[in-house]
Image (cartoon, rainbow over all chains, first blue to last red; front, side, top):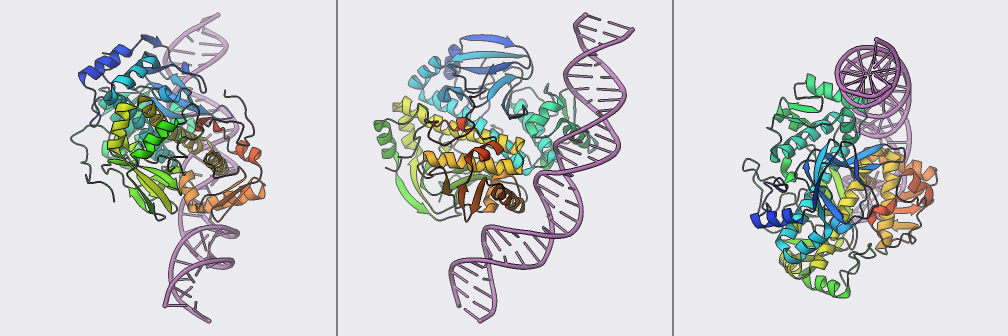
Length: 249
Length: 249
DNA sequence: GCATGCGATTAACCTCGATCATGACGATTC
DNA sequence: GAATCGTCATGATCGAGGTTAATCGCATGC
């Protein structure tokens, strides 16, 4: 199904069969989009949202000089601009990085879901908050890590996310991004990303060639990027147990 | 009312009287908290959320060395950790910056609201997505602006937000933050924040003394920080004295 | 009176990453 | 075949901002 990867293995909010069917029924059309195409522009009124089925998409802000800051990259299974449902206008552009397959969900369908299925509504809400949690990790990355740490953190994050989508074996994955894309994600120049990639390769942490990442030493890479996957809310029995179940104060 | 400032003057989602009353009724307790106190820790299970009535709060991530990256600051009227309702565990700490008055909303009350009032639910959802939009502006700030631009952008944003809460006249406001706090927000050192503040003062853009910001030239300040308030989704674009109101893209 | 402590300020030094430039390589298009 | 373009690679130079440390102003407390 088109929604198979949506909220897969997320802590406590994976969809019931009926919920998944309802969401699947909410899809109006499916289409393929070529690479580097804009799907929605900042400020535009939206009455539908986009579920990414295949390919890589991104959300970004442009500065005055046309330089671009990516604020999110999206992998198959992501509900790319579900937040447009409550917001109606976006504060950023949305576009494809690679050729992509997308499924369209009209907001009238989401109206119906929010009227009839509060539990599913909460799960959709959760999905948008997961994106916000990733925003926060990106803030940490830009605010507190140096160039090498930023790229290391990004590769770790993407590896875990792709793995939970069944698109990485944990050791290598194809991303289809260029060094310039990584620069726009990590707030660096392409020239410096190139040097960072070389450094990571020479230190035996990972390689990045032709849009393909190979992780050579996952532990070291995670340490270098101060990466802790808790913010991804993935349902992994191996992940560290959550502390302290009592209410605050 | 305690909820008076919540979603005030936000585009298309301000609360109806009945909705506000329902939210007000959902508050279980109110309390005051001293400055620099932690309200919720990362990873902790939460069954209630916090509405900020008075004072300044923040959300932040710590790095390995104890350095801190703020990911949000919250002003009166903000539903600080409403996202804990769907998420249940937070990926960051929540604390007060100044002495604060908070109202507690148990999640069981939010369960009832989501069952009975889909429209209000959508507005609560909107509120959490507004925080995400601010996260994105912060990503832009850290990724694409230099030190001076970051501080300028932060002051502009805070001015507009405080103004919509009725706590700034658009020219000056009291924030209660130190230069070290601004450093943790902008991904800089306190030493460099000090240099930036001096620069902004000498250029006649704004001053920052004893936690009080005075805006001397709003237009220049906004330009320097590439600040465009669209992402705050405020209802009346005319009221904040915002320069450089170029139509969005 | 003095001690203590926090925040703001400033100076000296140094490093990380930006900037500018150039070239190699492969994939197109003509 | 030549020409063009996108991506990757690498060197040289420079400046923004980090690091360290000392000083000052102003509270508060004894």
